[in-house]
Image 1 (tube, rainbow, N blue to C red):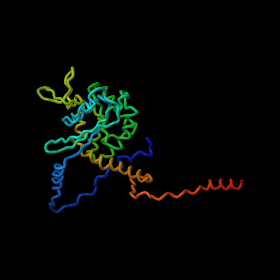
Image 2: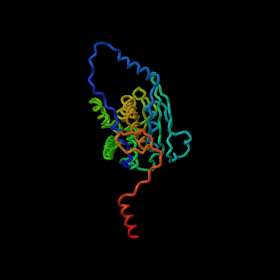
Image 3: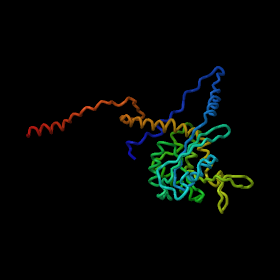
Image 4: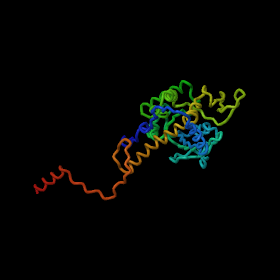
Length: 312
C-alpha cells in the first residue's frame, strides 16, 4: 500500500466521552423522558444494518447469515447462477430484507463477494491477498474475522489456527473490531478484551432444526452426531451473534458513521480539492479556475543559460 494514500487511523476521529461532572439538581425536570422519546422514534423509523461477507466459495457464508438472523436472508446460489461452477467475477451481489421482531424493524443489507480468492490456498495462515485486503478494509469498515467450517478442525487444530491468525493480524497492523482505542471505560475494556481474545470466532452455520434431548435446536447433522450451532461446547457462533446483534450492534453503527465515514469523507474532500495533507484539515474553498502562472526558471538554470550565452 502507498503510505501517502493511506487513510487516517480510525482511532483519530472517535468522539471522546463527556467528562464534565454532573450538576446538582433541586427537583424533577423530566430529562428521563428523552429515553422514551428516543424509543418511540426508533420504533417508528426502525434500524439499518449492512453486512459484507467475504471468503472463498463453499465456506458457508450464506448459511452463516441465515443462521445469524434465523431467516432465509440469502440463498446458497445467487439467482441466475444455479447451473455449473461459480464464475470468477469481481461483481458484488447485495440483497435487502426487513426483519421485524417484537415490533422492532431492522432493514438488513447483505453483500456477498463471490469467487474472492478461490484460486489461492490459505490452509496455514492468511494469504498475501487477505493481508492486503484486510489492511485496506479495516480503515474503511469494522472487520470481524471468523474461522469458517470450524467443525472440520479438532479443538487443538482450531486453537493453533486461531493463534496463527492473531499473530498475522498483529504483525501486519490489521485493527479488527472491537478496536482497543474505542474502549471508553473499564467495563468496555474488560468485555472487549474477552472478545478480542476469542477473535477469530470459530463458527458453524446451520439453518435447519433437529431434535436433541426432546428440544429443537439449530444444528447440522453428521454421521458422528448433530453439531449444535448455539452450543459453546461445539462452536463459537453464539459469541459472534451476541457481538453483531445483541451487545455491539449500535456501537458498530456509531463507529461506522462517526469514524470510518468521516475519515473517508475527509480523504475524498482533500483529494477533490488537491489540498496539502494534514491531520483532519479540510478546506472547502473551490480551487482557482484561472490558468496557473508560468513558473520562473530556477537560479541554477538561469546561471547555466547565462554561461551558455557568453560562450556563444
